[in-house]
Image 1 (cartoon, rainbow, N blue to C red):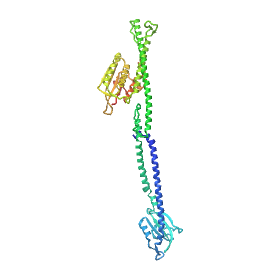
Image 2 (cartoon, helix red, strand yellow):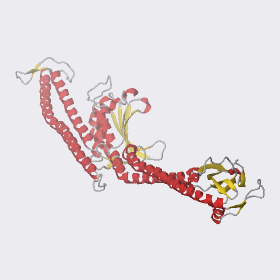
Image 3 (cartoon, rainbow, N blue to C red):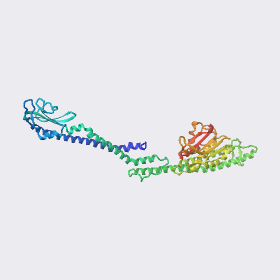
Image 4 (tube, helix red, strand yellow):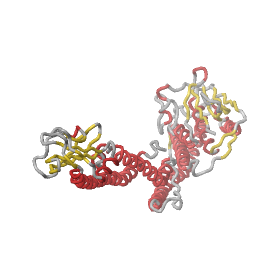
Length: 492
């Protein structure tokens, strides 16, 4: 993934390795160019010496004066000079120049003022697109004092300067570019195990703290992998310890609360019996105010509504402990720690219908079921907890005489032919404003103006379970614009 998959890697190790490998290659290419120039300069010095050695032979090639003073001298070219000129046809020239600078014999373009002394002089001159190396020397011949000039256009130093790009720059550039791609490929291939390790860690779930494969890593990376595995073990042990603490705390809280609830239930029954004896014509409910009543002829006098308020508080605390335990279990387990199983959603909905039928009947709520034969892959106990919370919430907040419907079936993903199993609970209660629907899933959040008891954990637990199943809980409006519809699409 040359996506952001290894951008950080490329900006670190890969960049440094490329610099460390390519900078020496650039330096070597520059050094090679300098050596080429030095070689050409050395060859040019040898060419200068060869030209200088030809000057006496050129002077000896003058065998007689001309017929008149204006006629050119008679020449019989010495064989070495003739061979030199023949080997470099088009790249060599000679001239016999008079004292005033006119050419007597040879190439006219070699005219010019003679040297001031008898010492040889070297110069460079461009003619017809060729740079010539020219030696000029005043010498005495049989035709008198003449200036002898010999030019060589094959001077390697001059040609090197003219063809620098073609002969030196281009090959070195091609070499450097090829070396860049070769080194870049080699560095990427060498760093591939490290990049794969990085991608493997990034792909992990936050709850997946299993050990990495140290044996499959290169020797240089193995200490890093082993250190990561030790860190994973420490974090996993700490997280497991924290999860056990939360689970144990919630579990241990259930026992004393159950005993307290049993005791308060006994008190409430005693109060009910006492009230029935004292007021046989009075129909008692939990919210009706009563005067203090002597319970079981003891010295303890309790107000009946206080006892029932205490019972309600204990019930709420017990429910909170159970929800904390469910939330702890949903946090502590995931698809990575427990394998998912095939769940019969229709059977799950039928079981929940039977479980909550009495609570619905007590509020005269029509609890219905619309279920198709559908199966999903997931954790059955977590899905049961999720649906239980949704049904309990729907019954709790739906007014008397309302309807609550459990559904399961198949739904088509928008824009594709894929179908996913779903479960949902719908009621025709007061509903929830659109701007508060997302906050309903937060822990301990309750919609403003909500009537009834609750801790604000039921939907948070359901949403956590949805995330364990790689989905999210949808808060939708009920059909017909009334009530609320809680839906979960389960990925296949």
